[in-house]
Image 1: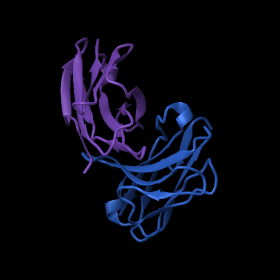
Image 2: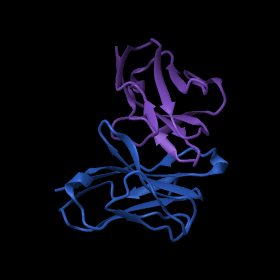
Image 3: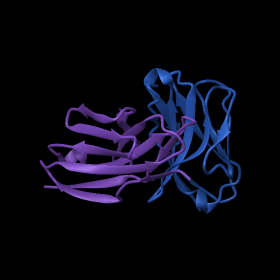
Image 4: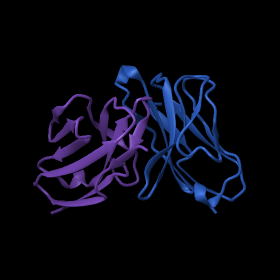
Length: 109
Length: 113
């Protein structure tokens, strides 16, 4: 079967750095997405990786290792507004998105 | 309209009633999706449509039906609602011209009592 694993919840301090991991086992791979979802709102796109390596976008970076079935989202200089759930999703061989359950990130002052 | 719009935003529905959730996008995206999101389970695909005139079943299609008469609209119908269909429903669309990134509507919070 297809499976995406990410931690259920993480806590970090304002101004710090946090890394959210995602491991996947899917039938084929056509890219990995990270989305942010604030409570009561829709998911919004953060990043997309299809090749191995690090993609940096401001305070957020996303890393991919296809051989290890592994990705992480790195958030720097954490702000209170970063408190949200972070969803990892893989585009499988049929170009369907397979979603992880999400990681709830709690930022403390 | 800018992006993707769902209606209603919330609804309380009696069990056994029929309900249609509406979804409209103005991005001319070929693919559209219906997901349900339940606590601890993440987003689960109900039905999808790769292009107008075609639909397909996702992970949890039972009790739901969809149609795709044109590019913009993708309604989801619950023929006879049951309490287990209480959930938050998200419509999304994507297209290769936008890198297959999924864009989401604001969601419909449905409670079946």
